[in-house]
Image (spheres, rainbow, N blue to C red):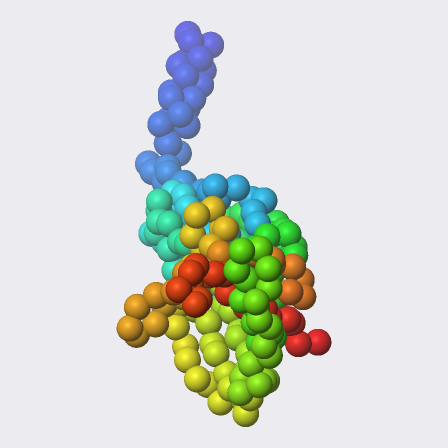
Length: 233
């Protein structure tokens, strides 16, 4: 009988422990830890000046903080998308904390190609000056006239990756600030003005030379005007 009572006591004790016994205590469930992830589209390897979408996933937290190694900081929420246009390698970091303050973090780096490897980078040329050079008129395959724009000597353009440009006179005074864009698979460039647009065919675009052409009427017949610029060193 004594042995039976001992066995019953052990069983009761085990049941109490499994049910949170031992004084009637209640087991408090743990707060789920925060979970974060970053998706980058279309790729983590892009050309100079390409745009990407950074999509964040945040679980078990109200919001998170997205940072770049360039000093940018954004509050973000689950499934939110941020767009970035990149000109250099950039690391994105996402962090979030659960209700207990326990933090989760993740980072991803996007690699950006050299500015010399695509037309946007060449045109932007890290903000250098495209100085106006000579102009040629070509008709029936022959150069009809070459003239240096004496009145424009020293004028220059600066192209920005956000599809705007600045045009300065020889005294470094801003003459125009308008838009531009590539057309027809980057074989042409279009300039926007307050009164309309002008479109040119790209003849040459290198690290130091830019040549554009357009068709005009010259002496009652069609001719090509070739406009040349060089990078100011």
